[in-house]
Image 1 (cartoon, helix red, strand yellow):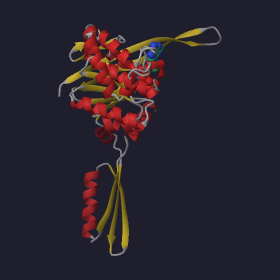
Image 2 (cartoon, protein in one colour; image 1 turned 180 degrees about the horizontal axis):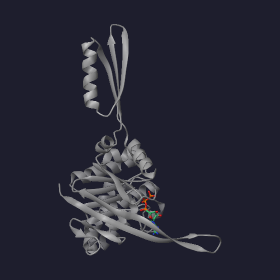
Image 3 (cartoon, rainbow, N blue to C red; image 1 turned 30 degrees about the vertical axis):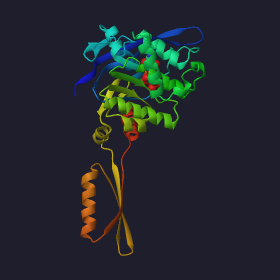
Image 4 (cartoon, rainbow, N blue to C red; image 1 turned 90 degrees about the vertical axis):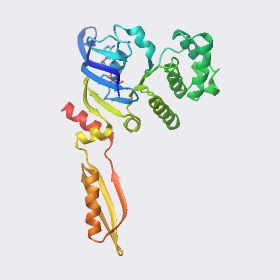
Length: 307
Ligand SMILES: Nc1ncnc2c1ncn2[C@@H]1O[C@H](COP(=O)(O)OP(=O)(O)OP(=O)(O)O)[C@@H](O)[C@H]1O
């Protein structure tokens, strides 16, 4: 699988001011990114996780040409995000939270058609695409209602539709399910899986770790501006040595025995427990395996880092 998004040693500093007393201000330097590197492959959903202020949005903004890094470089399909910014904009779709830039008096459909024109589509193509995408994101019944009347969930769906107007092969979805009800959030996850199947590369951020675990092939946990651990959710749990809990209920005649073991290697442990139970003439009636969650991994990583 080749690389769609490549970031190498990205650095970004913000100069800001904090108040000291009523009038005086003191200059502060915020190191938002410190040598951040990551790759997203074609046909992959990459989840960027991190606590508030870790640098996720800054990373997304650099990769989508909205911010210029102070150091390092990044490419999208081999094109430099700074030197070839206009070209890069043509091959990426972006959903940024909170979404901005829709025209409140225009309908959802008119907004999409308008952005389609900005992407260089002809009037008829933009209108056809707008109709198709309103349907895809489940807004066909609200096509002609003004944007200002849209609920939070409808706005989130429209933002996804806008990101798809020019059919980009690379998608950046910054908290695309925030504020969505469970049914709508599931529909968005299904859309993301559909895009992956089509071979698109998707960078996804969310604070919902359960969701990230369900949708992402690989995850990078970012803290204080750099990736501190990366891999599939399973790999990350293994790297941290998180324990699975295996519980087995076994019977001999009327007697029920519960065997419970914590392990980092569930396959081998399960095999051993089953063979021990069988050699003792026990009949296994229930097996339960509790997998550690990505949330546990996340908390472990961030706590260790902050120590
Ligand atoms: N324009 C700016 N000026 C000053 N500081 C900024 C600016 N934008 C971001 N920062 C700082 O950079 C750091 C990283 O911010 P960023 O928005 O990338 O975090 P994040 O991981 O997306 O956080 P969240 O999960 O809260 O959205 C934070 O300390 C933030 O205060």
